[in-house]
Image 1 (tube, rainbow, N blue to C red):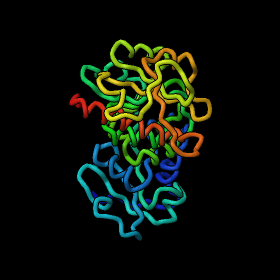
Image 2: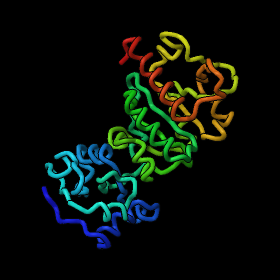
Image 3: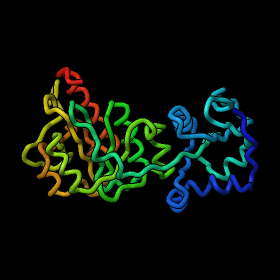
Image 4: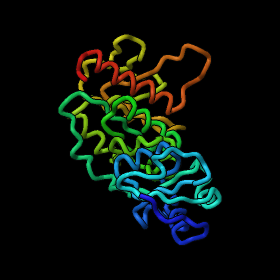
Length: 268
């Protein structure tokens, strides 16, 4: 359905810009979605009811019409005043209660859940959400103080995956309570007992049933108390001269290895 044109400096344009701020998504319960891929996924799942597109660009037909959403033409200047990263299309979507749904997560069959402890970098967080979705993960848990999933950088880096799988907040205590339902695996470049090298086929992760794979803060990694509370400690071997992998790269490798191991065992 075609909506009214978005004008630069209008009240609606100001509201959209406000949705991109922490105060905006907390006060209004709506957050900004930028870029063709993220907006496309938001429309598909029914989260975006109003889409704003640059009518001077040859955008695909899906950004000009579609069931259940209004598509509002706008000038490039009007959109860039709201977001310089929207690539000609943006929308707004409702936030959700980040604590609701944790207690109902299903661990009755083998699955992979990703947990992030105090991950503060929005780009890393969004990329990990995307990798978890691509690997067939069941959910992403944000443990303690992580970046908000409603931060535009997280949404953009997730490339729409934030609309595919649950992204939930939990405390350390709640995370550890999952050990009665799943195997909690920590990740660390340091040497610990119970170390598992991700270097075999199938890997040592096979046959462990439901998995919760925990990744730490970009600068500090995981605290020793969480590592020692885990069933095993995953370590990715470094064959070249690099000192380490960054968080999102390591998460992609481990989440895929966990999912691949379950598939090789016929569990998924």
